[in-house]
Image (tube, rainbow over all chains, first blue to last red; front, side, top):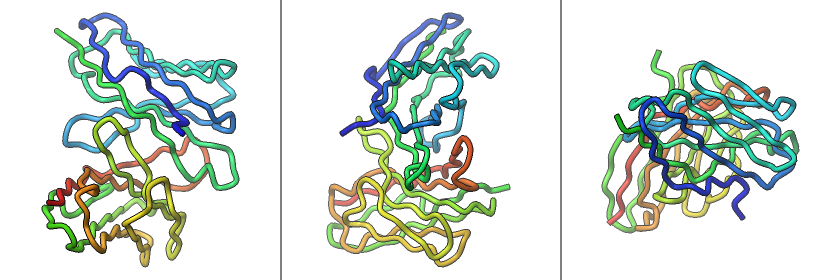
Length: 115
Length: 114
């Protein structure tokens, strides 16, 4: 039972355009959502997060939107740059009962930004 | 500032052999985790620890054991390696269970079981 789903295995965009990566979740107890970025042969690195009490969080070129009613979040990258080419993982954690100890990850989306 | 260090980075085993992956963090983090990454499967939690001397099972714990004898170290053991354990293993740590739960990951350990 996959609680965090990234239904697009890959996405290709042109440099300078917007990249939109999507993520759906099923567990209504999740209250923090994070995006991680991973380059080949490196560990994932934290990119941006959002609490369930917010619907938007922005950090430079990166914005995460949360739609709790739809159990959906998205990561927008504007403008996209070739250096953004990486695998992006969506992750979620819960409020308590031991669930906030763990992050549950999606399968990842490979973003390719073409020059 | 090393962060999270994993050793070894690469290892090839034969079926049935045993080995231990070592994770060390120098950030005084309480929580530590072992994940595995497989093509098309994302990151799956194997075991985790919420403090020195504690361990708990994650999503895919079978075939693995862990120990957290010292706060800074988290060991992942394979007692009898199987080809299905061929994967890239990532260790991660974070300060505690509050807030945005940001994990700091190591660079990974690539294990091949023949």
